[in-house]
Length: 442
Image (cartoon, rainbow, N blue to C red):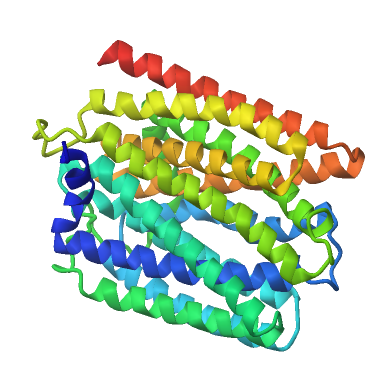
C-alpha cells in the first residue's frame, strides 16, 4: 500500500541525483530572493505608477530578450560538459547578483539594472535547461517521471520559500533599498552553494553529452543550424509538440492573470496603499500557485508509480496516460475556477484560482518534460528543452502584453478574464487530444 510513497523518493538513492537536486534547490532559492527584491524595488515601489503597460514593459525586459537568445543556448548544452555549465553559470550569477545589489543600493532603476537582471535570469534559465537535459543520466528509466515531478517542484518550492523569507524580512526590518540589496546578496550565496554542490557530481562527464564532441570552438557559427536541427527533432514527434503547445497556452493565460493579480494587490486589496501590503497579498497569490504545483507533483507520483514495472530505459507509455488524464481534468477545472475567481476579484477567490492554475500547469509541465526526455535523443535534447523554455517565456510575455493592451484600450475585467479563459480552453483541448492519442496507441 505504501509503494507510491517509496517510489516517489527512490530517485534519491543515487548520489548524483541528490547532488543535481541540491543544485536545483539552492539555485532556484537564490532566484526567488532575487525576484522578490526586484519585484519590491521595481513593481511595488510607491514612487512608481501601477500602469499595466509599464508593468508589461518591465516583464518584457526580463523575459523577451532571453526568449530570443535562449534557444541558441541549447546548442551549447548539447556540446559542452553540463557539469561545467552548472558550475560556471552559477559563478557568473554570483558576479551579476552582487552587481545588481550595488545598483539597488544606489536607488537606480535604470538600463544597467535591466541588463544585469537579464544576464542573471538568463544564466539561471541556462542552468535550468542543463538540469533538465542532465536528469536522464542520473536516474533509472522507471524513475524518470517521479523525478520530473519531484525535482522541479522542490525547486519551485525552494524559490517560493525563499520569496516568503524575503517578504518576511522586508516586513520585519523595513522595505528599503538596502534590505532588498541584502536579499540579493543572500541569493548570490545560494548560487555559490549550488556551484559547490555541482563540483561534487562525479565522474565529470556523467551528465553528458556523450554522443558528440564537447570541445567546439566554432560552435557559434553552427548555432543556427544546430537550432534548426532541434526544431526538426521536435516537429517529428507530434506528442512532443502538442505537449509543449499545451503548456504554452496555459502560460499565456497565466501571464495575463499574473498582471491582473499584481494590479489587484496594489490597487484593490491594499487598504493603506502601502508597498508592504501589496507585496504580502501578491505573495499569497504566488504561494497559492506554488502550493497547487506541489500538490500536483505529489499526486503525479501516486498516479505514475508501479513497482511491477522494471523498465530501465524509459517510462512505460501507458503509465503516462494516467498523468495526461489528470492533466486534462485539471485544465478543464482551471477554466471554470479562473472565470469565477477573477469575476469575483476577492483575495480568497484569486488565491484559489492561482492554486488551480499552479496545479494544472505543473501537470502539463511534467508531461511535456517527460515526453521530451522519452522521445528526443540526448544529442538534441538540450536544444529542444531550450526551445521549450523559449516558448514558455514568449507565452508569458504575450499574456502580459496582451493584457496590458486590453487594459489600455478598455478598462474591463471581463475582457481580460474572457480571453484568458479562451487560452486555458485551448490548453484543455490539447490535453484531451493527447489523452485520446495515448489511449489509442497504448
